[in-house]
Image (cartoon, chains in turn blue, green):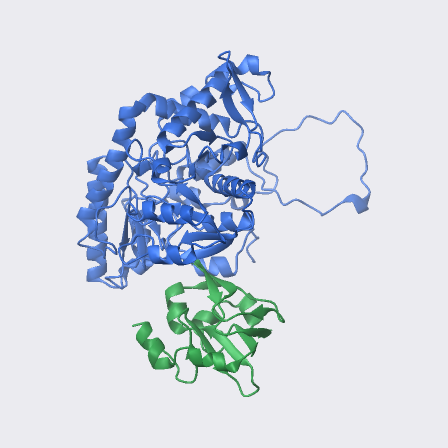
Length: 493
Length: 126
């Protein structure tokens, strides 16, 4: 407040919103170019693409403030709770960064002779060995650069194995209706025909539907365990048996491996291929925050077809890098996202086997704690204990749809859960706390959701306007998608 | 949710309406558009393309999700609703009229008999 009652200018808030173009003033400069020491060369008019570039004219200080303010708008797991279901937004320990920055790793060049980078190759070999142990499958390729690429590499490896059996004509790939959208996309890209399989009333895969499709044309099934409903699928063993008996192979999407670490091995359940997301389960930075890595682990039958390169230990104890005999080929350059692989190795090594058990144990405990605390507010489509995440249906209150609740959470400083996925749950709110959050954080999140529910109970339209305190309020997502405006334009005078 | 009596319905939430010229007008139901939310893009089949009953004929994208469109009957695509390209919101605003999706020249108009009538569809979506 001021003595005359006039509100403060709120320059800081104003500054955060101004685009670089709006800060521009004619003639203002941020750099001083040296005088030209060459005679000017006239440009023929025909070579000019346009009259001017319309670059903003700003000082260096303005540019620094602009980008610093933008960076302060970032929401990250380093600043706030990020319960984005399916994404496993766990804390990324900083020690991983220190390990990946060690000169022997950070300065190694992929074209260096093997004898000069024995340590780096040994690190990759060790990571492969750890992932073999976690998956229960004997061969690993670290080459895929992201989860979805791991899926594609995995189904291509699966296809190569079928072809080697003389069964390359098999085309049908079964995919449950709860699957990540990348599964059908990967299967289609690998040349398979996608067949959707429903869930049964208990939330497990419908075995009757699997049996009905298990004929001479079945190539396999792409299956997520635990499922995207956060449930341990109780039909997985039988499904693997049915598909194998029909001559197909079974792919496991390891996106939810965080719930299984050290406790159950997908290889022992009968899966032939598993991809893992190092940027989820093994704490390396995510998507926009850093490149991913989607290694694949396979059975002995599929090993000769793995994408290269694969790190090997030779008989003389030295380490090398080889492409498997009948490899599907390369899926990226060099040794995959090497820096990401090192961060995952650091995480696994520091936690050790006991730490792995703590990760999965606390991830599951936290999810079930939220289930217990939030079940008075929302419908629970499948009423049983969950694994690493819980999917609610926000259909009790018309004034508190999944979208409304998600938007209002931003005002409380929490990232929104994943919403409207999986598609089989109406008004889905998919909440994944991960193991790295404290009880206090989870309690604050629960408190926020209770308050949001009370707001909707008191005023049915209130939440439709949320968020109220974020840098921008409710965006018109439909209009943005229908009529996108992708560049700044000078406002008309 | 409105379910007009003049047409037939598939379990995949498409409707089919026989027109006087023998063509069949196809769209998605009011229930479907409501569940989808704001539609932002409709991927239409090409005119002349073959469609099969209950098989995929296109995709529809809303702010929530991308879903598949299934043809309620077999035949050849005689016409598509070109207005949806620039105005996908027609599917939300007028699912049974201006938001129609394709016009099919049916192989066998008796396929309509295998679809649900309005009371049966209304019961399905209750």
